[in-house]
Amino acid sequence: MKKSILALMLLIAAIATISAQLPVNLYGRAAVGENGVVAAAKPEASQVGIDILKKGGNAVDAAIATGFALGVLEANANGIGGGGFMIIKMVDMAEPVVIDFREKAPGKATPTMYLGPDGKVIPNSTIEGGLSVGVPGEVKGLLYALENYGSGKLSRADIIQPAIQWALQGIPVTVNLESIIKDNYGKLVKYENGAQIYLKDGLPYEVGDVIYNPDLARTLAKIVKEGADAIYKGPIAQAMVDEVQKRGGILTLEDLANYEIKVRKAVEGEYRGYKVYSVPPASSGGTHLIEILNILENFDVVKLGFQTAQASHLWSEILKLTFADRAKYMADTDFVQVPLKGLTNKEYAKQQATRINMNASMSSHQPGDPFKYESGSTTHFSVMDKAGNMVAVTKTINYFFGSGVVIPGWGFIMNDEMDDFVPTPGSVNSVEPGKRPLSSMSPTLVLDPEGRSFMAIGSPGATRIFPTVAQVISNVIDFGFPIQEAILAPRLFQAASGSLNLEGRYPVSALDGIKKLGHDITIRGDWDSYFGGVHAVLYDYNEGLLYGGADPRRDGQAAAF
Image (cartoon, rainbow, N blue to C red; front, side):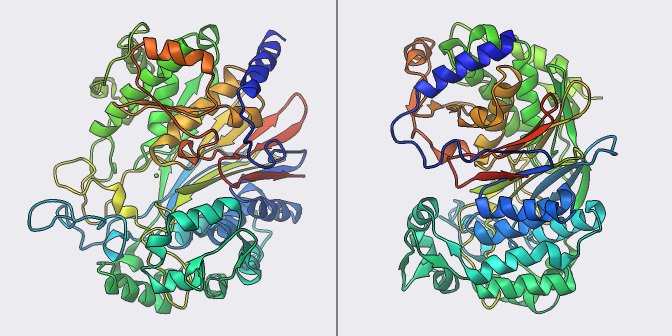
């Protein structure tokens, strides 16, 4: 009861900080139901998932249908030319399984491939054009999950047909999409294949317009008939190689034919009695999410208060420690020894917690020594069905509109995921052939203290992903916020050094205290997509209801039945 009253009081205080310029449909983005819930970055995609559940599909069926639909509805952020991570927990599984369908470096990649004759990185070479393209993994990842964890009741056509329909009937241009197209106009106008789809007579689309992509529908129809081979072999593969190489890239048919997803063991931790599972490297996100929560657990955050100066200072210092570790240790574990057990160890977290001075900010932190404890413009969606099966998926083409390279005749955008490597030699995350670049994606599943399915959560947002996910988890577990309110709450972000970034609605009462503790502050927009776009689902066992929360910082909306 006390926790519920506290949550209500904190929620009222948080709402009081909200400015007059609210996103449209602030609370209507949430959903509640008894049989299933989907939270995704587009309302149409969430509804696709719900329709699959209504047809008798399970959470995995719904997730894969939602994923293919998002590749059409939010093609600027994800799709066939990209990759990602998925974590699945079926009720009869002892532990979750992680499907790593992250892009990887082509076979001809080298640590110096982005350096000019002067030894400096060639401007834009990692973020635009063919040389920025990694080998995509999305289709193999999504179909592997469907074939191995789907209900078996629905065909590939049942799962993919909604995405085909959206590509044919067209996607509505929202305020958010209009803004993204305008922001990326310079990239789009350089590549005629993309310009033909995402520009209207050479100019940005506006709200109310509709974008059609029959070529993408054709690609999806081919996947229905042929499975993953439609992308990794044959005419589409050849078209990918031809276009990427035409744009200066090094992708080959061998790269596509040899691409394999990785089935990995989840990283795991426990936060105040709740079991937390997330994705391992090549994503840093899951490991550092658990590291953050482990350090946070050493402090009485409720006593510190919600978004007070002291609480904000604590978060800032924890993030400095975490990002220092990320820079030093994190990379693809197939190539580099990463101290995963140390970074997620409770004793290591206690040692890290002792380094925090609650009375003063440090300008930066050095990494710790976890070895002695050893034994980015993305999309996210979460699904849970009535049985308690949970899926969380984060996938991407990296920057909005990826490399800018669109495959002619097939309508999909190639990633610029090579930018997630360090473009110079000497780093654990430097380029190597076949290596997966470091990521911050953090699709995460949480079990309650009784071991039951509790929450599936994740976010886009580059390096802000795992700090954002950690804040929302704390809002729910520590402060008792309902999932939508936990998502709506203002956010902060701090890297290993530099200023503390606060969302514009952050409590004014905390600002002076934060500054007195020695922090330089950067105030960002009231509802700033810089801080991600969380989409989460939660099972309330007291009510017997499934709740979905969606982020107004993007176009997200949950659906349930």
